[in-house]
Length: 527
Ligand SMILES: NC(=O)C1=CN([C@@H]2O[C@H](COP(=O)(O)OP(=O)(O)OC[C@H]3O[C@@H](n4cnc5c(N)ncnc54)[C@H](OP(=O)(O)O)[C@@H]3O)[C@@H](O)[C@H]2O)C=CC1
Ligand SMILES: O=C(O)CCC(=O)C(=O)O
Image 1 (cartoon, rainbow, N blue to C red):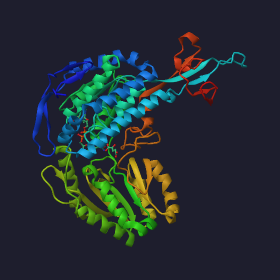
Image 2 (cartoon, rainbow, N blue to C red):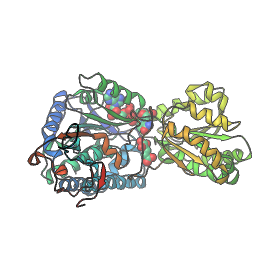
Image 3 (cartoon, protein in one colour):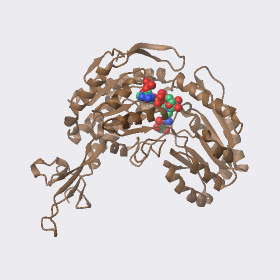
Image 4 (cartoon, rainbow, N blue to C red):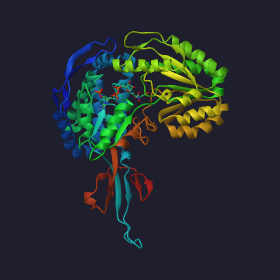
């Protein structure tokens, strides 16, 4: 499939008339062909108008048709073939195996949402039948279902060019909810974005859906994204990226005459607590496993273990020795963009220059665009006194906080901002300590995990990939897993509607065979 550098607006491919730009080969910094042209305000206008036009038809597609569409998107992405992986490797610097895995996750995610749609549980149908005889007042007939919120703007993330990008989790969950999507390609991987966008566009056509169900806009800067979020037809936003970018979009969304929600996944340092019995028993093994997680994808995961909390002692010494030895042998790896590499180097330099911080180990040095892993340590006292030590350094860098006692671990956790994950390494003898920390962790993070690390999010029904601000802009939701669909739904109640006007989900004969809450009681279809 040729990459043309065009914007995909509904069924059309239109060359933008804005600034032109090229993708950059991550490993070399060389420009790649072809030139992409940024979308203009008229392109944004057209994409949003088509999305609004498509909305009422798309949101009322049958559950089966919508599920088949999601499956068709998945199949079309696979059908792009190796070209997608090759282009994505060049643009992101990520290795083949990682990207093939990520494509599998992207496709699996779309198929999972197809299952969610077929199941129909997300509609949360409720029926409170009328009670005309009720005293002192009769009860009206009340029925509730969830409907799609409207067109959604999705910002592709730089660090997951497939699974968190054009047809990633935000797009899959929005389409599953019944929302048209206008995606903004990340300029770090515009060719990958176009290939995936064309696959979605083909699936829209193949399924006979209105063309406005999907559009993809290119931009080398921020004006298209800003215009999208400000457009009155956009009703919600999905974003993964920097805190600065996410907050800017939240402000634009809040300043609109009609404010809308922005579901932004932003910064997180993902504390890892090493409890004493576990550390004593297998500190060295944990140290080696930690370096594996830290350096995965050159550390460019928002779930990266950026903060380690442990009690001083022989167990911690063993952990640090093993982690430092493993880290020193870690090859430097190409980072996603020169900008991300520069920000990483600046973050490392700031830690190295901090008198309260000791450099424990550096990975092997690499080329111009490669990130060199780093492990630092400090004391709990110093950490609590300097808020800059809690800032995310995006890349393979982590800070170990040496704590004199469990109270210090707790104090550090209490001081942290909201996080996506917290990991606790424990043995049975650590259960009391863990029990005492759990309430703090529940207040701080979206996912608590034991004897592992947060990188590699499972796409499932019980997953939360979210957390209190600034991990995300709204800690009540998730961007991964089937619960993500709820970001793009809202409840509508129907009071005393004649049977002929009721949506299928709420009819007495329950033609969609849904589990429904009937007069407050969860009821099987046909019961
Ligand atoms: N925690 C996490 O999950 C991640 C964190 N990051 C952090 O973000 C830094 C930069 O990486 P990057 O991926 O480019 O993230 P950004 O947040 O800078 O960009 C993400 C997307 O949002 C757009 N954008 C950014 N700011 C604005 C704005 N003010 N108005 C409208 N659109 C905007 C960008 O457009 P454009 O690029 O065209 O400006 C891009 O499409 C990294 O160094 C890292 O610190 C990055 C990825 C994931
Ligand atoms: O760890 C993962 O699998 C996902 C990480 C993520 O969401 C991110 O880096 O943006």
